[in-house]
Length: 582
Image 1 (cartoon, rainbow, N blue to C red):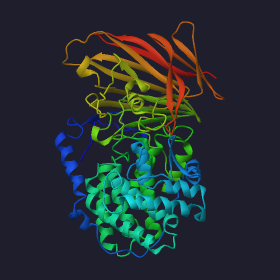
Image 2 (image 1 turned 60 degrees about the horizontal axis):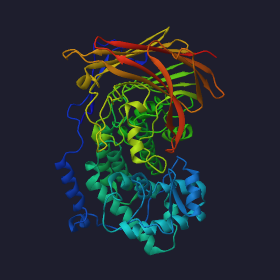
Image 3 (image 1 turned 60 degrees about the vertical axis):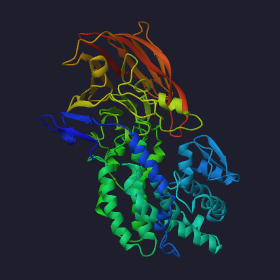
Image 4 (image 1 turned 90 degrees about the vertical axis):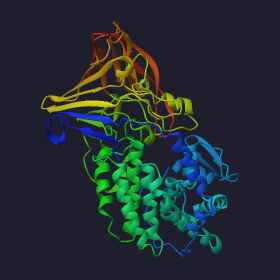
């Protein structure tokens, strides 16, 4: 299935694969699941509890694992220390282990997935030896088996949780299989085999993207680590290829357009390759090729500090996390400057990195926290960030309740233009993305004097009759970024009415703005960093409160520059400039 197709305007490819003309289109039938699909899915989940599905999970009991693959990505030592202290810690939420009941988890959906996927085994192993961690892991494992070993149900046996669970169970087998209780050990090994048979049946029915990819990686992990898995390996490698083809764009970006999902996908494929390595088996070409494409796409969204930008619900993933996953992938490459189908543009000159969301949002059914961010930018100067997006819509937890998460998905939570206080793509009451941006036109040129990028989107055309165009010019030394935001009447539309306009630039934490006397500019002081100047060519500048969400889902107070103007029926524009002055 093609999520977004690229249509080349008269192609004039430049250096490094930069195309001067590109049109990206969001599919016209982009809708969430229909009522009929939801009903069918409900009955499908009920079928898991039938004797027929139960019989399909029966088979030979494996007596051992053939090997224990390495997990090269370190865990969260704080979460691991919390587990040793007697409770799980996830995005500020705590859950005691001694009263843990896997049949009734009073946590957020993301916290439940953390527990059911057994990702916490990595955190525990990062802060405990085998002798210290095994009794804790075994106690939790027994609780999970008591609630979920016999009958599959969601979310415990959902394809992605089941796939991750197989990878973490096998990579951290010493923590869960060190017991001298042979009955318990047999139950764990049998559950590994039952989970693999369950995934054999459901992996292709999982949502396209990371969930389906995870299911097939779990199947292959089981095929390589459980005796007698030759047939499953052939089956799994064919499924993995299909999952990779449907999960990634040709440029290596994942279909949900989320940097967090991209990071997870690279980590997932790296863990699967570690399974092949420990069995001294050659990985399939589709696996190595997917990593070779996914890593540069991921690096394309890194700032000067090595951390990721805040796009499509992700928080600002820390540099250490990104570096650990890249190291585990063993792919050495440069950042992708133009992700044509994934939709992100990167301009890196001198110490300056400019990231641009130059594509429509992801289709509704592929992104639970998709954002109306088309045209937004982020800017960093060396290891310090200057302009950001709020981010964090996908990181619900103790600090980000559901209603705040929905607010973080709006156009106003991103550094771009907002017309009449409306989202460029609608956010529906059920949390899905609705109508709005369907087409983005992009032109990019590189010269010795700098970079020029122009994009336009139709998010406001149907409702208000305006096309939003954003022109960005970056000087050859990276010390000057000029922009112009234009609103022009759309063709074949009635003459649009006058509308209020706001141009927002969210400042990174540690950036202190001081307005100029004429309210047309501001000095931007970065803590222990350089001095930048902002100036608008029209409208009135105010400085307002904002927030920025880190990788743990914790909001930090910050400020934002807001330029207020008007969209006029004949067209209007606001020019602006960021200039490094010290």
